Structures are given as C-alpha cells and as structure tokens.
Length: 530
Image (cartoon, rainbow, N blue to C red):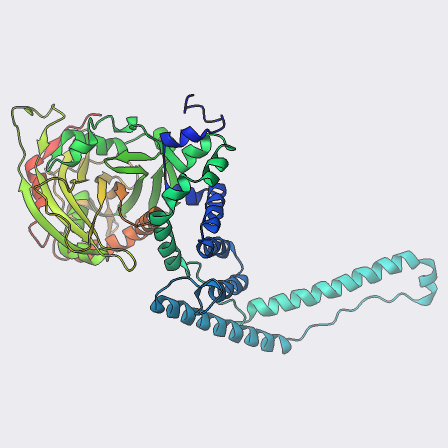
C-alpha cells in the first residue's frame, strides 16, 4: 500500500516507514494528548500533568488569571513537599519561588492602590425626567420604557466612570506575568522524556491504537518518510561532502539555490515566521535529512543595512573582536588550517562543479546556560563574489567529526551540525535594484555618498541574508532553536549598525588576520549559474 496516499487510514506497519520526531509530536495537539496518556500509564503522571498545565498557562491572556495559574502550578509541582513535586535542583526551585513572591506582592500592592484611588473618585449622579401625574396615566407604557432607559443609563455611566478611573489611575495596573516562568523546568522534563520515554511510546499499543484511527497525513505531520529529499540535487552524497575539508562549486551552488529564488518560489518553499520594517525571518515548509540529522527545517532571515556597502558589512561581521561582542553565545573562534584554491586533475576548470575553492577551516564554540552543554562547530568556509547575481556568498559547512584531520570535541562539548552560509548584496535604496559591488570596486564611505542641498545622501543599502540547517545534537530541544533564530533575526540589524558605526571610525578594517577574507582574495569573482 502506497505511503503517498495521505488520506487513507494509517496501518501499524506504516510507522516503520517514518522517522517520528519528538518536537513535531509536541506541536501536534492530538498526538501530544496521546503522549500524555502514555506517560500517565507509565508512572510519569507528574510530568504529563505539568506539561498540560504549562501549556494552559501560556495561553492565558489576562495577567491576573495567569498569576493565579502560576501559583497553582508552583504549589502543585515546584514547592517543596507538594503533591506532585518534580525532581528539581534547589536553586531553580528558589528562583521560581522568589519570582512568584515578588509578583504576588506587587499584585496586592496594585490592587490596594487601585481600590484606594477608586474610593476617592466621585461618580456623578444621573437625573431622569419625572413625568407629572396627569401625563403618567395616559403614557404608562412610555414611562416604564423611559425609567428603564434611565436606569440603564445610570448603570452605564457608573461603569464607565469606574473604568475611566482605573484606566487613568497610574497605580491601577496588572503586574506583568512572564509566560516563560516555567520554561527551564519544561526543557528539563522534555529532554528527559525524549531520552527515556519517547522510543517506548512509539512502540507502545497506545500509540499504535491511536495511529490506526487517523489518516496517514498525521505521520507526515509528526515525522518524515525515510527517503532522501530531492532538494539536495546538487549534493550527490551529502555524507561524503560533510567529510570534505574544502568548499566546492557544488556547495556554493547549493547555498545560492536557497537564497536567490523568485518571489513565487519563496512563497512555495518558505513560511514567514517573523518580520519588521528591516527584517524577515522564514522557516522551510519541508523537513530534510542531512547526514545523520533527520527531520529538520532550513532557517533563513534577511536584514537590510541602510547606508553601508557589502564590503563594509563583511569586514565588520568577520572581525573576531566584534563577533565576540555582538554574539554573546560565541566564546571561542579558533582557525585550524587554510586550504588554497586547487585545480587538480579532477577539477580542471571553473566550469567543473567539483572545483575546490580556497577554504578556511575553523572551530566555533557557543556557550549555553544550564541544563545544556556547550555546542562546538567545525566549519569549512569560503567567500566568493558571484558576478551573475552581483553578490558575495560565504559558504559555511560543518565537517563531520569522523574526519581524522579534525580534533574531537573537548570536555563535555557537543559537536553540532550546520549547513548554510551568508550573502551580501548591494541594493539601490530608491529603486531597489541590485548594484555591482565586486572586489574590484572601492568600499569607502565617500564612494556611496552624494551631496544634495549640503546634505549627505547615501546611495547604497546592503541586503544581508543568513540561511542554515541546524542540528544542535544531544538534548537541545528543536523548538528552542527556532525561538533563538527568530530572536537573533529581530535584533541583528540594531546590533550590526552599532558595530558598523564603531568600525567606520577605524576605516572598516578587520583587526585580526582573517582567513575567510583571505579566501575572497584568492577565489575572487566567479560565475555561479543555477
């Protein structure tokens, strides 16, 4: 029976044809409910009930009701000696207790101030027309209607007065109740459940009985078929490419195919998950397998940098000193070696897609708070200028740790995987047309300015793009990756402009010898024809 017919009912044997993903299951309300039923029957009732309560907590819009729910969750799951006490470290327990104490005290204070203010607010009485006795007998029905309207008017006036009094009163406000209060506990529980219970659930009768009552589409929603995606047409063997220590033309073509797409294809392939005036953030509509990483999305964001050229932005973002400043998670950057551009017997011309470009191999260490281990990436990176679409393209691809030329992760660091890169394209701020900005052109501020009525008018903006397939490995929840990506995209322009301003004062230089910039000098201008 075909697994392409998504409307038919599932069969138990269909499960073997899919990779079911824990995070996707959590995002599906019905499947998540089935999982909590399994947890309840497998002596994990506390964890299941906590997850349900936290989901309800986040959905509450009214601050005071959310505070009541937060107190309920604390008393039931967090407080020492509570009925369903979870296994938490003391510092986290105290942190939540202190936060709730502060919120409760502030809420009581706000209520007291509001009541005090309302008691001194005069409420104007309303008057109604009293009919005289002679007309009352003739217009009895009208009088009843008029008195009723008068009474409603009085009530409405009083309510309006109360509402205006509270809304204009600086003391009358709801204390802000953070929806992320229990996030650390939730992450700890989810990591444990994924490691210890998820595989048992997939093989349990509860899941099998549930699946057979649902259309096959459900398995597509919470997993992906065990097939190779056609999306990687440029990469003949992704596992082999991950073992390379150089960047090829194939790698650059693959990256370009993700960035340079028509508006029609963008709508087909990507879902917009966040935007502002200066940025857009997307997630791929399809999931992909890369090496031993399965069922993940590509992530992409675009940011506009007004008044700066691509070269100025490249020099700033690749500066090690600034990188440590604008990326608080980045704790270490260490270059391993540099591979020159090669024209071997198998790669005799620029037209060969296996052409090997000058490549910098370096290590990047990202630090994360408890309960997560630090993540370590080992990249092969190469920077070129594509004259077909007039933009700079920086390919950043993980090297598999099986490669014996790369050191193994140190201490408790987790070797993560990343496939993607950056692009920089000069745009006319008025016409929005692409401006040629290759390495042969100047990048001084004056070159992109003109005088108009004694004012400096900038002639270029840079459209910056990041696109990556990220697998943080280990127990790092996948939804958290998407959240961090959205936050990074939203803040990237503000932070970038700050350091562009600082670097402008010293002439847009890179403080340290940068091997990635060296690859641009050697690779130069190329033609990447899709």
